[in-house]
Image (cartoon, rainbow, N blue to C red; front, side):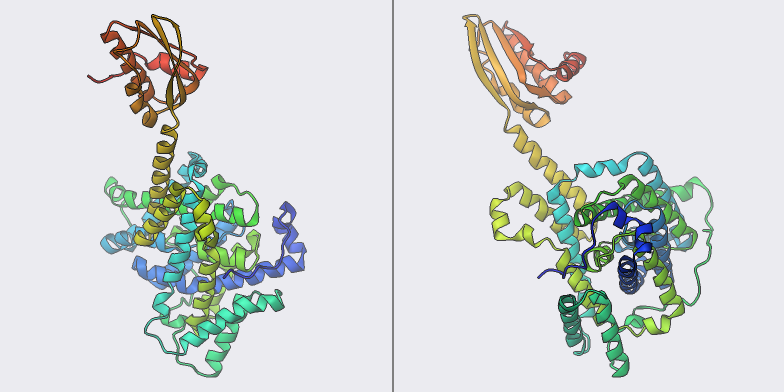
Length: 503
């Protein structure tokens, strides 16, 4: 099962511009309605994340408002939704629990500052080192987590919840076949809410998730001493928050890039997230980052493509919870569960687990994907899962490339000379075995090692070549290394004879 395709929106710079959207009633309608659906879906999640962080629900709701509005203006990925998230909530929860609310806000402010510094340092460019298999694992794990997050709303609940969820799923799947004028998720939410109110059904609703705020957010200054002791307390959590926030945001941005076939400015997105967290902290919010579920609702389900949807999602959220809190509180959770189930189903990369794909895909690629999924789902920490996935991918790549390196005897110019040719890349994984591929006892007095079809990448390779020369020298034989390209020659001349070669 896949998500219904949204109304077709031409993928061009003109359509992606806010000015173009404002001039087109059709595109503007898509953006506005998408934002409304996202805002409705944000409310229960923001409340849930507030509970995880140990703060009042208003802290998460206000954080979602300030994050969305700020990133809409400053972020590098149009149509991506940023708000209070579970990953950030898990990181900052210990600060709230052990040191209180003021230290939590100080952590959010420092985390935002660190994200800006990371953006200046070019951290976003590291995204190119994340393999596709890790990206697929990241997406699949998020889909699983989104689905699992709905279980509490489906366990030990009135039986009416189940037919309501089923009805919502039917509306979301079938309505787009009739019309795409209004997003199907919004129709499902409105119909189920109307049924609940008119029939006075006793089912869990948004109001059961927590108290909604009745006033606008106000500026807040954390009351913490400006000392090294305070920095010592909050710095580790702020650094973890900054890393998790950047990683989730950039991975989500790349996913949206792929869906919309466009390119976004990852560096701008990084410092935009940092500024958004600082603004959020100044208004007493718990911080956040990009949200995969709400982003998929906005981009893939509803067809939004511009910053208008992100901005309005934050504005609608504030209007709904402050101005129409009593109405929003009556929305049955079954409606939102149906929306999120479809988001999970649509986000999962079903092609990656198809038998035909698994048969063709190298086992190392599948291992990386599965490892990423397992670690993310087990730890519920996307950053740890991605880091482990990249490490496994790096080991698999190094192992595969190392096996391509060969040492071949190519010539015997005379009885006193033997020529070896090294074919392949020399780095720490392949050079460790290089020393054992020469016949030190049986070779003649002079040995030539031809590296014209190879490349020296690191100090380990230079140390290995030094070890080879040392072993031949111990038997009274000489070695000549030739065929080095310019980069390899420079590295070899700089390090040769200056590295320990072992006993």
